[in-house]
Image 1 (cartoon, rainbow, N blue to C red):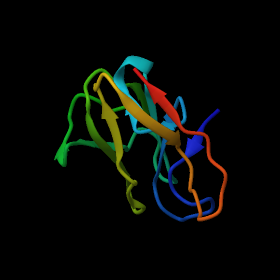
Image 2 (tube, helix red, strand yellow; image 1 turned 60 degrees about the vertical axis):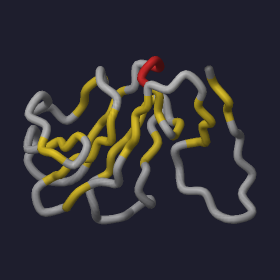
Image 3 (tube, helix red, strand yellow; image 1 turned 120 degrees about the vertical axis):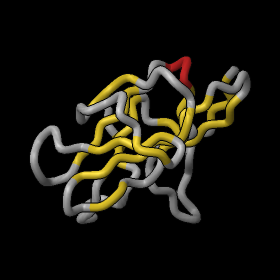
Image 4 (spheres, rainbow, N blue to C red; image 1 turned 30 degrees about the vertical axis):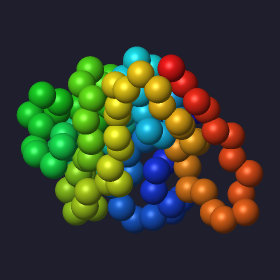
Length: 109
């Protein structure tokens, strides 16, 4: 399912990643969804800190590695999501983890 990378209930833009693991890997066919109040279709995407004109939708499948953020009017930028194309990656669930939580780690290649 979808997993927000911002704390639940936060009044900011949220960038959701599917599948819900971080860092995301390009070979998983990663889908990013930008959520936040405001006008539908008013999402601005950034890749590696630069405005990214290739996507004007609220949801898309990533085809390039990089660090992505999105912006919704009046809500600010989301937490960044890294999408890697590395051959060996250690992943954790894409959710807020607190000290003492039990978490599943995945070593993928």
